[in-house]
Image (cartoon, rainbow, N blue to C red; front, top):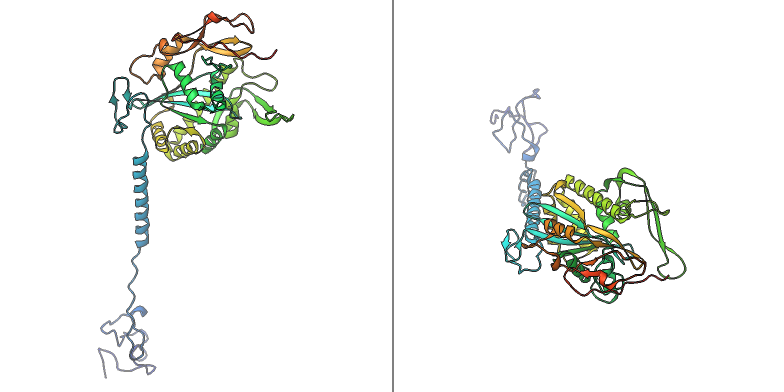
Length: 428
C-alpha cells in the first residue's frame, strides 16, 4: 500500500517514528509517519515526539531561547545605576555657603547680589597644613576661587608672620596650638587671626595633616617635579622626655627632575635646610617658592588627567582624614569646578613681608601697603575695597636694636587696637 508517495515497505518492523524509503535507495525521500507532509526533508530530532506511555500527556516542546535577553537586562541595570549616580551627584553637589551675608539656598547656581557681596561669585578657603607632630600650622594658604571666570588665586601666609596676640609667641603658626592647649578651638583662633591680617573671615577651612598629603599625591600616581636642591634632613626629638630621641621626620631626595611619590613629595614640600645647615639661600621664602612650584605641578598633572573620579577620590580622602567644615557635596563641587580651569588660571603668591628679630626669635612683619593691594586684587570676596584700618596688622616702626629690646612705642596695629607686648624670651 502506497502512502503519500512512499513505497509502502517498512524497515525494521517499526511502527511510528521509523523512517521509510525506496528499497536500495539510501538517499531517497523520507517521510515521518507522525509529522506528515514534509517531503524531501529530514525532520529534526527536536520535532520528533518521543513515545509516551498510555495515559500520560506528552510534554510540550521547549520554546527556543531568545538570544540577547541577558545583555539587555545587564544594560538596563547599568543604565539604572548610572542614572542613580547622576541624580545623586546633582542632588548632593553644591557650592559651600558663604559667610558674612544671609545665604539664599536657591542661589547656588546664580549670582545673588547683596549689599556687601555677590553670592556665588567668589569663594574663599583657608588651607592649613599641620606639622608632623600636630603642633604648629607650618603651611597656611588662603585661596579665592572665582566661579564666574574659573580662576583661583592662592596666597601663602609665612609661618613666622607676627600677629597681635596675648600669647607669648606672636607667630601666626603658633596660634592654633595655644588655643588647643587652653581647650579652645584652634581653627577658630587661627581663622580669627587670618581675619585680622586680611580684613575678612574666610568662608571655609581645611586642616590637612601629613598623612592626607601623602595619600592624595599617591592617589594621583605621584607627581613629576624638578627638585631644586639636594635634600638630606633627619629630624629627631625627645618629645616624651624619656631621654631618648625618637624619629620624627626625614627627607632624602636628590636634586633633579623625577617622579615623586607621596612621601618624597611631602619631604620636598616641608624641606627648609639640610643636616649641615645648607639648603635654600633665602630660607623660608625659597621654601614657599618651592611649595608653590610643587602645587603648580600637582595641579597641572591633575588637570591633564581630566579625571573627575580621581579628584572625587582625593576629595573623599580629605573629608575622611581632615578637619574641615566643607561637606562631601561641597568637595564634589570644587572638583567639578577645578576641571574648568587650566594651569594658567591658577596664580600663587606670598604675603609681602620684612624680616624682624624680636626677643631672639625670627619673625616677619607685613608690608602693609603692598599687602593691601594684593588683598583687594587677589583675595577680597566683598564688593567694597578692604583698607588697612579694617585689619589689625601688627607693625614695627623700626627694627629693634637689641636682642631682647622691646620698645613699647615701636609697635602699632593698623586699626589702633591695643598692642600685646609680652613677647616670649628664650632662656640665655
